[in-house]
Image 1 (cartoon, rainbow, N blue to C red):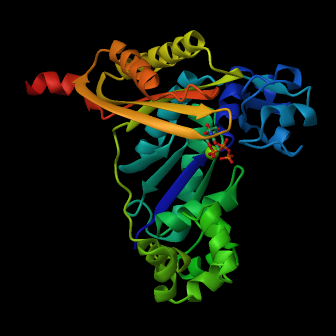
Image 2 (tube, helix red, strand yellow):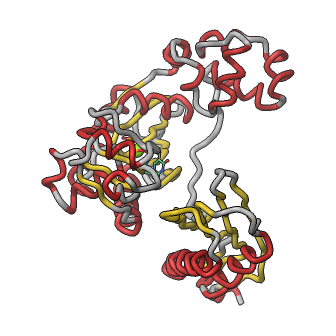
Length: 352
Ligand code: TTP
Ligand code: MG
């Protein structure tokens, strides 16, 4: 029998800020765009649970948050610190499990099948991991435990904040059955709407739907939906040492069409991405430029180049992509620059 844990940090970016300034723990604290006294653009990346009590949440426009709570603490995003803390958490979890998969900056699957003989043992093992993360990294987390990644992940959502939830294999189907379809992992807004139109409101109802019917509507994804709703998930926890991409984004104060303003920002973003790439001793092969226009239409433009570790190539390629693709009849709201297609150049050198 497999025992899988999903460890997700609570209000991660804001919890990191509380380490730097413990007095924030009792204050509503919001990490994200600068609110500029209500005129700011961009969104709340996350906020602590003190702020959540006022209805503030991730992805909310920062101006809305400011309307609700102008006297909250508003802090800029300090990625490099959060990445450092994320690395610390990963090392702590590795002390407890040989098989760890990092899903995002604050989310980790651990297969602890060999470590916990029974589910009671799994619970106390999770307690130990949670305490170690709290004591060593000074950060709170929540842990979901089950025999599949799917149910562990969804159990963790229910354990939040600062909790542990175990769903035993024979309880998995009934645990899922009561949830609205929108809460099933993998179901986004569009799928949710479609499923509701088809008459499936809860995961339990979806579980009983005919696979054929689901596949008629969703093709192969229909089978996945059927399996998920029935708590069937064979996927394994896989080690992933590699980073897939590194990116930075920027939202302009005012939508703009000024070429010099835009290229300056593309170069700045490229330089930040370049530093990050170099810091990890990576070489890259793909550069992507994201352009979001004032009407919120977004385009991604990518180019493959010769594998290189030269950070300058990012700005050069991104600016080329901009010149070749920009729709100059429209103003730009937001920019993003991404590097991907990595190999570790230290290893490459060894190979050659
Ligand atoms: P989450 O784990 O989704 O959120 P959280 O850790 O802040 O809160 P919770 O207690 O509910 O887990 O995301 C982890 C971090 O990723 C979060 O602190 C901020 C960042 N983030 C973004 O950058 N963009 C987003 O859209 C979201 C949701 C989060
Ligand atoms: Mg989290």
